[in-house]
Length: 196
Image (cartoon, rainbow, N blue to C red; front, side):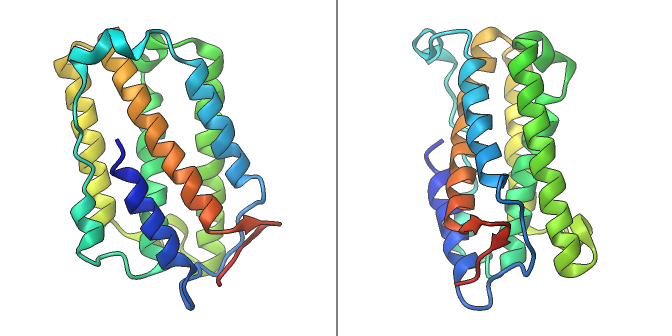
């Protein structure tokens, strides 16, 4: 899902402009956990993607939200990032996903996502005093929620087949890869979210 990269890159630019900082500190390990999550997703591969070409689907990430200029503040970017992480965690924290993949990498991925969500929530609590409630559920975050709902419907329509899970694994890998790029762009280092 190559459409995620432009959205998250633009989010990085929006959050790094003057006045665009969240005003909170994320642990320096936050970006490393993202990279570790990608390694774990790679380890979860059970089929060659070439065997699943017929099962491919364009999940239509809501790119128009970005192009419409709806992401004006760092909190909007944080809402998108948080919703992306939360929906990924929810999707992977089901009985069906447990049946689809090896337990060790799946558990590690769930733990990494949970760690990132806790760090982001703590950061937002520090910045706003409200944590995840400060983000609300508007525009882009709702669009991501619908995007993941489409993924869930796809899995159900495909009977939770091995190929369907492989396509979803690749989709999640692209999304998390883009989110890692976003976090790197935000210059999360030494525990601080830079505001250049």
